Length: 304
Ligand SMILES: Nc1nc2c(ncn2[C@@H]2O[C@H](COP(=O)(O)OP(=O)(O)OP(=O)(O)O)[C@@H](O)[C@H]2O)c(=O)[nH]1
Ligand SMILES: [Mg+2]
Image 1 (cartoon, helix red, strand yellow):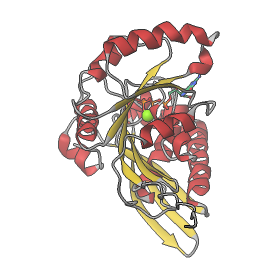
Image 2: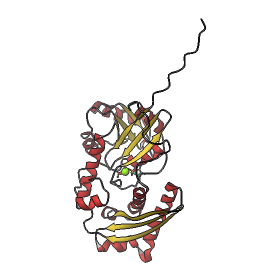
Image 3: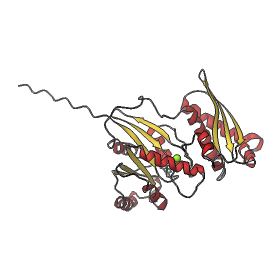
């Protein structure tokens, strides 16, 4: 009898959706970008930057994961927009195979625990402890990890730094292990299910968050009025909506300088993401109360 080598069983392919949740500003969007390996989701040092769900797809030989970046969950602000943002977090948690709950290293307070209360029973949760680069002496994390693992049942706990890119592969492995077996749902080169039109709006909005001071970003949003592909050039007409007439000159700046910087940075980001030339025209318009009615939010494409 000859001994034939037994062929190794092929690794099961896993596929599924994974919601990334947490309070505002913990680094969810930075983490999504790091997991996908490209800048898809907008980020800033201000809380409540992300306003709607955004998918980022990771494809490996053994798995395809559709990560869903969500708005920071909070209960302090209660405009129609804030409520719609919270509803979109809750909806993401109902349609997911696993959850990555992001907290900041050594900081898990009542605002984080409000997120914990949303986590549905029966869906595995991986705790990602982010911003570990800000902690000197990593053994300071051990009591923090210990305390959190006593408060909640996690499938895994992974300290990461989304900004520096550390422990991202370890987090990914933990997440993949929780997904059901199944074939990929998207092409291997797909990065997101979000349209270029919506990504363009987000990239322009990111500059409002980065360049407009502390208050004004919250009174602004972006509406893409026209998005046309003309050969290899994308021609985009976008409106920055503000809430009051008096906000318009601040966005435009002296002799249009501020608006010029906003548009030029957004255009460069769009060209990088879309891999082609972008012609971008931007206007500033007043739309009073745009964040205060469900009808106007729906028109602007916010999850309601
Ligand atoms: N030091 C450090 N800063 C980080 C890290 N990850 C994210 N940040 C910073 O934290 C801030 C918030 O990051 P975001 O990714 O926008 O956070 P978010 O959770 O998506 O915020 P919202 O969308 O507002 O809920 C930004 O200034 C990031 O640069 C990290 O690993 N280390
Ligand atoms: Mg975000």
